[in-house]
Length: 344
Image 1 (spheres, rainbow, N blue to C red):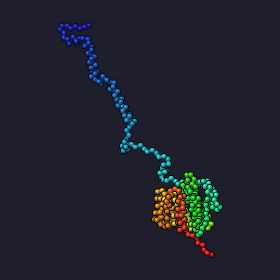
Image 2 (image 1 turned 135 degrees about the vertical axis):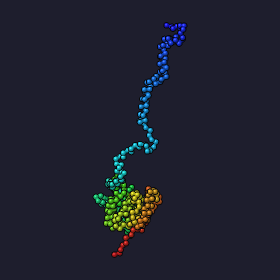
Image 3 (image 1 turned 180 degrees about the horizontal axis):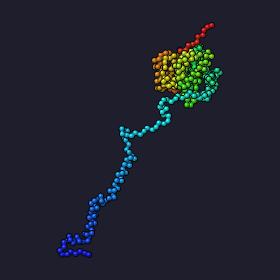
Image 4 (image 1 turned 60 degrees about the vertical axis):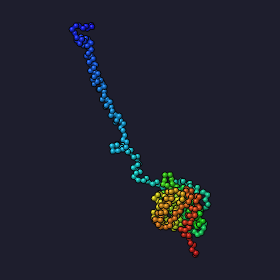
């Protein structure tokens, strides 16, 4: 029902009694209160705010920033455990490989070398329970100067035309009988040729050769070694009592091939004259070791020591075999004594 204004009433009194004023005003005031107080108007978000705060540390724990460089505060992970056997290796050097011979390979090589030889050239020396091949050449000129035993290198043979073969054929024409002695063939995984592990085997072979030569009135006057054979000859010269009786001279050719670094120098005064031959193009290390042997021979003194470098030799001695043979022959002629025949 529409309110009417009566005389004597003010407009405020009339509005106060209006229904919209009586019922709508409280609603409007409530809305204004809600707008002016966000803590009351939005209670739900206020209660949900702590949830993100509790979840923030999770990514920090899962993906920590690594330190840029290890320092006092940096955590260094422990080193991985050493594999089995590492402790034993660090404690000392591995044991030396044994001297195991490939007897089948040596027998095959001996059969091949003996094929087609003239009568009396092939000698089979008895060494323990085995037979060892050697090639013999008696002297063909006078005066007699005894015998020369030749020891070949690792990749060489008793009839190598560049070194041992050339020497064993030339020396008999100058009064020397020659005997080229076959050395053991190492089996797979065994000690390398020329190493000290093979010295007892080589000493036994040399002893059999010396006995065979003495039976033929051709005593050993010189030892010539090439490569691994030279390493054996050097040890024989340095070991007291190991030299054959009546030995007068020693020749080493490319001896670096069979020696350890510690064997590059002489351990004491030379007991016999030594000719040390190396190719001038053998490589820096070989030449340095040759110089070390020469210097040590000068320091220790003893018998005469000659160091000879033959030019033009890198790996193949065949082109220089003439100069090699001449150098060895001249040295042996000077330092061995010819036999003197006494008239009856």
